[in-house]
Image (tube, rainbow, N blue to C red; front, side, top):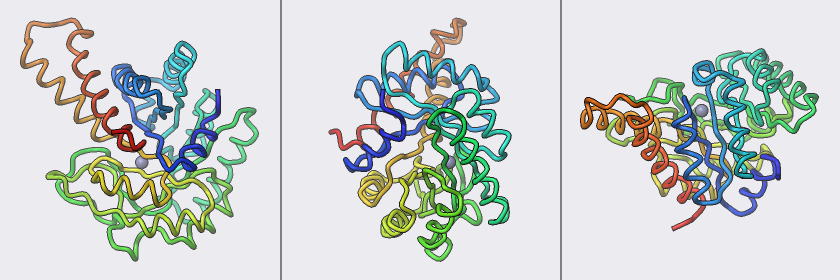
Length: 289
Ligand SMILES: [Zn+2]
């Protein structure tokens, strides 16, 4: 099977994007995999520090590997937003295919030094593990928000600059970069997430020389997704939307069947709801009607 690096390069050349979807449990994984398999598309499963401590690091690796091996399907695992070198090391040692070191809260010097340490660890682990870094402020929570969080770069002046991106990649050796280009984590109620600056995406891709990842995909308009991919995004993260679909389906099921106690029956509609969101997003990212 080709590596995640190959799939990212393929996606970029073909002008499409790989979908990255987060999970908190087995139902989420099954929903995402069902959609990816139905469309015969590669897919990346993400777990944040909170998500992976809930499922278990080794358990997450085993679950994803089981699907990859059983169905011979390109499904990969990424340690989303990891805030320490120790967390990155734990994920790589356990068998993750990719990691994100998020040093956004550190000084630039500390961020560069720790990111470089993560890259060196990945290069020497005996497998091809991708290391991603995030540059710029895009907020932190994958949840429903009343307003755009303070500090999120909606103004061009605060977005990641092509020069900073190039120098960061050169100094750290990261494989993938997640810039701040108007995107943000979470969804603003009423569907008013900021607009994506696609000219900036193109300039960063050109200057940085590595594939780009769009975080905070939930709440972005279909048009912005399409133009972002055209401009140079080759992986897109979706989390809030699938959390919402999962929760809403669960609320409805519990209300409709108050006497049902079998978890596999209570949670089946949530699996379907996650699959439906992922199906819609994967079609959009891959230009499938
Ligand atoms: Zn993110």
